[in-house]
Image 1 (cartoon, rainbow, N blue to C red):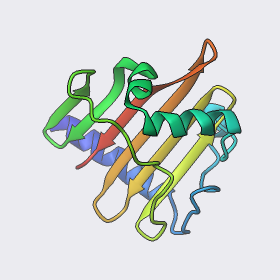
Image 2 (image 1 turned 180 degrees about the horizontal axis):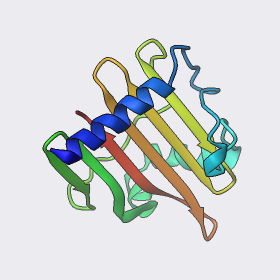
Image 3 (image 1 turned 45 degrees about the horizontal axis):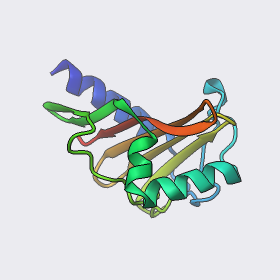
Amino acid sequence: MNKCFFIAVVVIACLSSCGSKPAEPDSAGADLSESGLMNTKTNAEFESFYKKFLTDSVYQMQHTQFPLAGGVFECEEVIDWQTEGWSMMKDDIRLFDPGLDSLITGFSGTTCRFELVRKEVGTYIVLEFKKTDGEWKLVYYEVVTC
């Protein structure tokens, strides 16, 4: 019960901080300067990585840091991300409907974070990529559905 209450508070806080202005996919974002992610646009190197990440399943597995932090929080159940049963991500999180969704993007030279809130259904999704030893990897993936 406490976990669901905490998740609900986080989702409500995110929804209330998103505002009502529609965001554009390539310029969406809030100031995440507290976390060091001040830019809302990525660079060409990350774009190249992200495109391959979404289209090449082997590359995606090689560039996902398992065990992956985050998980799926479905009210009473928490599902951890594992290599076994992993479903390939194919959709660019930035291709969203600004009338229905709100996206926050934060980028630095070594970290990229996307936070998507699906307003109508209350789903909250976070993806975080980090560049370590010259390679980008997915290091955090969270989905809250209650």
